Structure formats: C-alpha cells, structure tokens
Image (cartoon, rainbow, N blue to C red; front, side, top):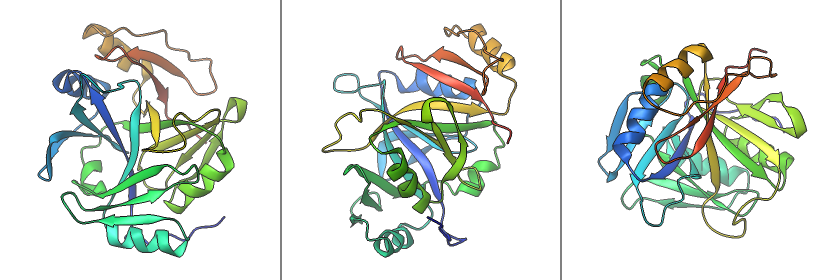
Length: 248
C-alpha cells in the first residue's frame, strides 16, 4: 500500500499509562531524557511527558490499572482531517467533540484507537531536542494487516527484526511502532494495548549510568545485538527496553 499523506496532517504516538505514582514516573521519564511536561485543560488528571518522537500520558491508577501495559493512541494536529482520512479508507470511526476533541478509529484487530487533538504541536515538542522516541511494542495477530493500518497514519517500515519483528516509523519523528506475531490480549473489545519501550540517540552507557545513579535497576548494555539495548525497571516495577537509534 502506498500512502500519500497531506503535509499538514500529522500523527504522533501517544501512550496512556496508568501508574501508582505519577510524580515518580515523570522523574523516571525525564531521567531517560524526555521532556517537556505538560497538562491538558480538558482532563486535569493527565500528565503529558513529551519525547522527540511520541508522548506518554500518565494518570494515577493504583487500583484497577495494569502498569505493565499502556493504551495505544495518537495525537494529531487536525482530528477532523484525520476523520476524513479514515473515511477515505473505509475505516470505522466516530468523532467526539465532548471534552477532549478527537476521533476513535477501529483497527484491523477490531480494537479502538483514540486519535486526539494534540496538546502540543509536534514541531514545538521537537524544539526541546531531547534524544528519545517512544516505542509502542505490539504483539499482533496480523503483522501485515497492522502494518497497512499504521501506514494510513504515516508509519512505514523502517526495519525487519528477528522473528519477524517489524519496526515502523514516520518521516518526521512521531514515535515508533514495533510489531511481532503473537496473541493479542483482549483482542475482541476495548482499547488497543501495547508495551512501552524507548529509542535514544544518546549513548546507551551514558543513559544506563545516569539511571543507575538515580537508583533504578538497570541491566547490562548489549552492544553486540543487531540493535544495541539495555533494560531498566521503572517506579511501578515494570521492565522496559531502551534501544539505540537504528542507523539504516
């Protein structure tokens, strides 16, 4: 599938993450190299932490939350234009103008993905020049089908990985989507869920040393891997991967 995107329409990965301690998670994400931190007037319970590519929206959720996973959504600079795009591809969608404006679109797995009006324009977020991009890691029942769906949003194949992993990104930093074959949890209903990972242009040894100094549990840096990485445990006790930026 070849998509010609409108230059003015952008989509950025936005992961909604329940946490037991928003302040500690903000500190953790800033230690990784992320920022700025913003709030949404439509929903004061959300705290947005921006990366160069992508954003994490944190909310207190100590009782019903599943901190190990996050809800996959996207920020856009024009949700009405996004709705028109979805309509042109015969995707099921529904506009919402109550509270936070946006569109809910149904993906190829039958799950709902929220596409909301951005709190901060992507170009403004990039002015912070932080080195991090957010990675949405998804086990998919149809990697090919998912790839086509995300291509509609401007994300195309960046690289194939081991065991059929696919890494999708956009021309302008907007976050990264990692797809691998496997069972998709709660595929029949509800919001699409993913695991959070991180990509950075900062030297991994430098990031790992900084996180260790701040008291986080950090694994060894694997430089010999196809994509060098290390793991780190966040304040909720969830382990995430931090990857070196792929150089094609």
